[in-house]
Length: 150
Image (cartoon, rainbow, N blue to C red):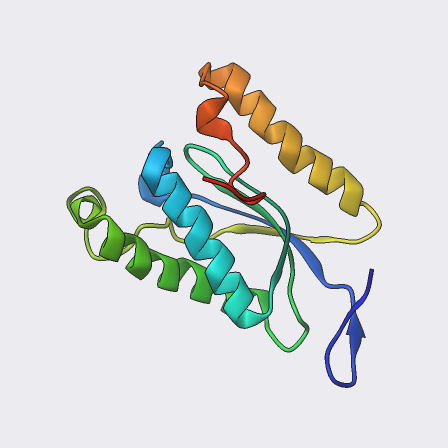
């Protein structure tokens, strides 16, 4: 469904994937809950809608609706930069593993999503199941971080 600004109707959906520095498998437990909250807050502050999202142990999948007044690169710079600072504020011990306030790796994957939106949403949801099987992690560790509750 089209969203709107004052004089604009838009459907701007993007599938985005980014990873922690060194692709470390570190996104678990309290850190995972904090990253979930931070990303939700940052998106809300910019008027970006999270359509679907999952935090894996070593990467983040997001399906975002970004208003056309923002470039995807600007939103990603904001999300990764601001979230890094907020993560290090809450988890000071991570500074020793990552150093220099860079929690996220340089770069990200982005793809526009048009008529295949439902397919991408399903892919993001199924990616979680594939990771569970591959890594043999418990389902408790993989509670949906973007659908409420901790």
